[in-house]
Length: 248
Image (cartoon, rainbow, N blue to C red; front, side):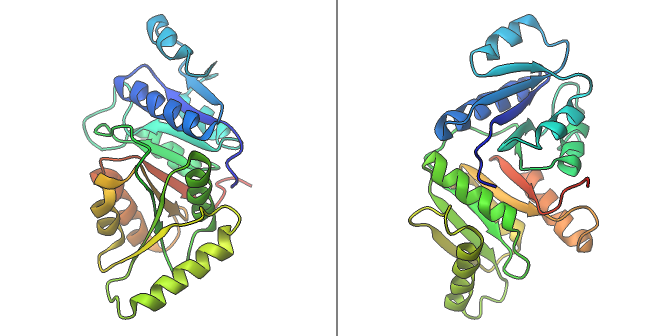
């Protein structure tokens, strides 16, 4: 994941999707990526005019989620709001977001309703020392380096018995996975909390949180519940980077 392709954002005309388009525009500019705005077929003319200057407008041939999933094959990242047009108040993520998280071939950035745009704060990577997700590591390192953003790595370990050993393991994993992409300097923090709690504690000082995903059938319900809790409670964008490809 060298992040050399375009940024794609899904727009359905809802205020949340327009906010996602603004975030996508800003990250694309920060990293000098082209921006593709993939929109629903009947997007209002006023909204189309509003976002037209940000990037290339492309009408989805049908439903937005499958079109975004297909676009994720070549995108550096696909950006979507947590809830789009006509979404119910609950659940926190609507069907488009849920479907895309299951079907995407690359990183998906979910923009919560309460987010704000700032890229002077760190990218925070949640790192699992036991089973680290290499695609997520490479994505976080590449975006931080390309966009000139600080990188902070958070390791959740409730025991925290030997912080120096944990930090050394983290550095070794990061170097092995993405030595050529890592910024010249980065921080590694060891947290005594659960993964979601550790990342939520950093949310207010974060530009983007990056987490891995190993698919719906991996490691039971624990990983799924931790990721969903983070997506439900965070006020900052979260990039979910799959360690698997959903299709052959």
